[in-house]
Amino acid sequence: MEVKDVANYLLNHCYIMGEVEETRDRYYYAINHQEELKKLFRQLGYTLAFHPAPLKIMMLVNEYEGTQAKLKKYESIVLLLFRSLYLQKRERLGTDANRVIVTVEELQAEYQKMNLPRKLDRLTLESIMRTLKNYNLARQLDRLNDSTARIEIYPSVILALPDNVLRASQEETEKELAKYKTSEEEDDDE
Image 1 (cartoon, rainbow, N blue to C red):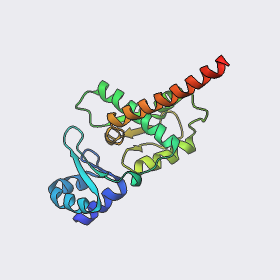
Image 2 (cartoon, rainbow, N blue to C red):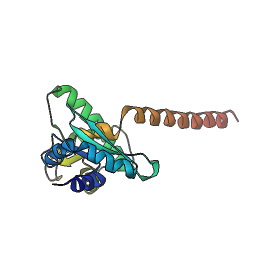
Image 3 (tube, one colour):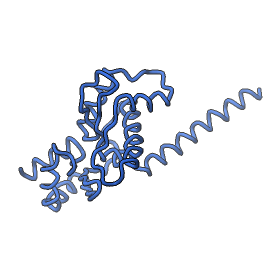
Image 4 (cartoon, rainbow, N blue to C red):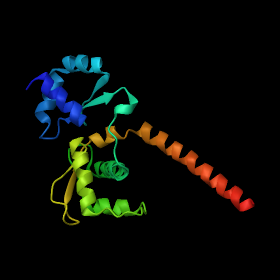
């Protein structure tokens, strides 16, 4: 393994995790070559962030706003649901648990609470899972043919949607909703 291999992997997948078998070797190589990687990425406008135990994640952060991954609407929704499920399960499992696994049924239950017009069918979920796996956010453990199929959610979902970003999005959404509510009330008054 070489620095360029790990650098290319980070550019393509954003996260390397020490607790995931597929990325473990890259993670420890990156730990041992942090300074080289930081220097390389600094020149390109990226920051290499390291989150030690319990997460054991190395992530690449782009300092330029327009070049982050653009997720489709339902990919973003499922990512948000995965984050919520991850936090719920992690709390129940305790801090020693390295793996968080949910079933399609659990995901569907959370999705249905949102009352969205579109159903989360198998083909849509498979497509979403390909994208999230590519960014090292989650992976399917079983074929998604039935409700008992399992999905592993990686701890990187916490970093993909940090609390400060969610708070800012929530505040922005509440402001927009308030505008609509105000305009509806004005229409009712007329």
